[in-house]
Amino acid sequence: MYFPNRVLVWVGTFLFCTLHTNAQSPPQIIGVTPTPQEISAPPNTMLTILFDRVMDSLSVNDSTFQVFGRWSGVMTGSFSWEDGYSRLIFTPDADFFSGEWVTVSLSREIRDSDQHTLSHGFTFNFWIATHSSSLELNQVDVISVRQPGEGHIQTYGAYAGDLNRDGYTDYTVPNEISNDVRVFLNDQQGGYQNFEIFPLPSANRPSTNEGADFNGDGFIDIAVGNTQNNQVQVLLGDGNGQFLSINSFPAGNGVRGLSVADIDDDGDMDIITANRVSSNLSILLNDGNGLFSAPIYVEGGGDGETACAVADADGDGILDVFVGSYQSDDIQLLIGDGNGGLVLSSSVNLPAGSRPWMITVGDVNHDGFVDVVSANSGTATASVILGDGNGNLQLSQTYSTGASFPLAIDLGDIDGDGDLDMVVSNFGTTIPGSGKWRLWENDGNGHFIHPADYPAPIAASCAVLHDRDNDGDLDMTGIDEMDDKLILFATDLSAVNNEISPGLASFHLYPNYPNPFNPFTNIRFRVMKPGKLTVNIYNLSGELIRTLADRYYTQGEFTVQWDGSNSIGEKVASGIYFYQLSASQFSVTRKMVLLQ
Picture 1: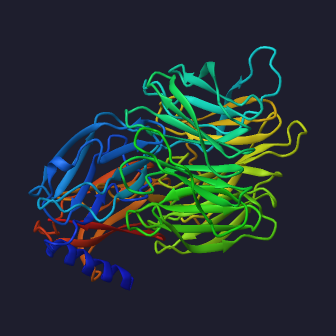
Picture 2 (picture 1 turned 120 degrees about the vertical axis):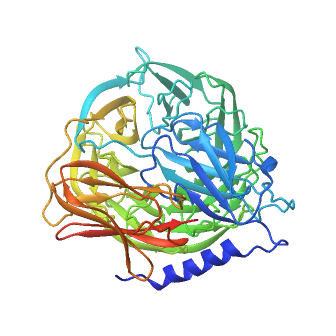
Picture 3 (picture 1 turned 180 degrees about the vertical axis):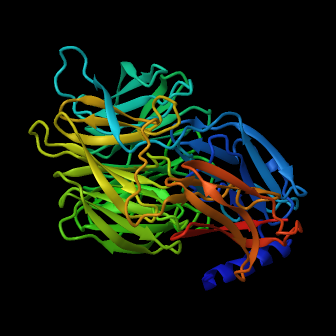
C-alpha cells in the first residue's frame, strides 16, 4: 500500500503539536469534526474542536463560537469539555437541514487558561448528508412571482433560508425591474402559496444575494447586490418572515457577485462583492450590529470581477476568496490573512471567450480540498477547477451545458451517494423553450457524467438545491426570469437508480465520522451492486490492523464501527490510520485520525 510523503510529514506535525505546548505561543486548533469539506455529516452531527492545550471555557460562548446553516440559519446548542478542557464539543439544539452547507466560525477572542488568545479566527465548512434518491427530477409545480395584472418584474437570484424558523426552507427572490424582494414562506408541505413584497431603497436591478446573521440576534438576514449601481441592501430579519429594517450601503460599481464571511475574524459576518463595472472587489466590514463601513477596494487579479465565493483553500482556518473575472476569462484565488487582507495566490485561464458569470465551491473530487466550478456564459460551458489545498488552482475539465448563456451553477449531493452533483442554469434566448437546466452526476472522482436536461418555460436563470419538503433528499427550485416563475422540481426517494455504469465501482465509501475520533468511529458505505466486500484497517506502514467486515452485502447502505483496537482486542496507538473498502475489482481507501 502506497502512502504519500506529505502524509508522513503531516503525522510528524500532528504528533509534535499534540505533545508540545509553548506556554508563550497562541493556542492552536489541531483537529475538528466534522472534517472540513465533509460531504455527508449527519443532520444531528455534533461538532468537536481539539486544542493543543487547556482552554478557558468562559471564553467560548454564542459570540465567539458561531454555527450557521446556509438554509437552517443560526444553530444554537450547548458546550461541553473533555480531556481537561482541551476538547470542545458543541451539541446542536436541532437538526441541520439535509444537503445544506454549514459554516463554523471561532473568533480570535477564544483564550487558553493563561489568557492567550488565538492568533486568528478559525472557520471551516461541511455539508449535511442527504438520503439516497434518484437523480431524476420531477416537475411538481409552477408558481408566478407576479401580482395579478402585473407586468414583467424579472425575477433573478434566490435564497432558501428559513426566515420564520418553522423548520422549512422559505424562498426569497430579488426582482430586477420592480426593485424589490419577494418572500415565499413554505407551507410546510414543500410548496409556496403566497408571497410578500419588500421594496429595496436605492436599488437598481438587484439580483445577487446571500444570507447570514449580520446583527447577532440569531435570525437570518439577507444582503442583496445591484448590477446597475454600487449599492448593497441589508435586510435584517425578525425571525418571523418579516424584516426589522432595510438599509443600503455603498460597494463597487456593478455588483454582480456577493458573498458573506467573517473576513477580519472579529466574530461578525462581513460582505464581499465582485464589481464588474469598477473591476474590483469590495469588502464591507460589519460593526457587529448589521451596519457596514465604507467599502475597502481590493484588486481581484482579473478584469471585470463578476463572481465570488468563499472557503478555506489552504487549510489554515482563514477564509479565502475565489473570483470569476468576466472580461479576462479567468478564475482567481485570493488568500485571506485573517485581518481582512487578501493576496492573489493563483489564477487559471479559462478557454477564450468563456465569460464566467457565476462560480460556486465545494470538494468535488474527494481529496479534502476546496474546488471551484464556473458557469461560462460566452461558450455555453461549465468548468471544473481543482484546488490542491496549498492555494493553487488547476483547470480540470470543461463540459458543454447543452444550451446558450449559462449564468448560474450550483453543487449538491442530489442522489445521496456522498459526492457533489452539479446543475447549470442556461438562459438560452428569449424564444420559449430555449432555456433549460442541465444536471450532471458526480462519479465520485470529480468527473461529471450522465447529463440530463430539464426545460424552462422560457429562460432557466437560477436554481437552488434544498430539501424543500423535509424528506431528507435535495429538491430543486428554479427561476425563469423572463416568465417570472418559480419551477419546483422534486426527487423521488423510491426511484433510486439500480443500474451500474460499466467501469464504475459498485459501491461508495463515505468519510468516517467522527474524525479525528476517540474511542470509536463509524465507517459508512453504499452498495449499488450486491457482492462480497471487505473493510480493512491499516497503519501508516501498510500493515493490516483489523478486518471489520468480510462478507456478502445486498444493495443498500451499511455502517461498521471501529473502536481503535487491533485483531486481538488491543488498543492501538494514536495517529493516522487508513480504512479500505474492497470488492473483486475495486478498492477505495480513506484516511482517519485516532486520538487516545
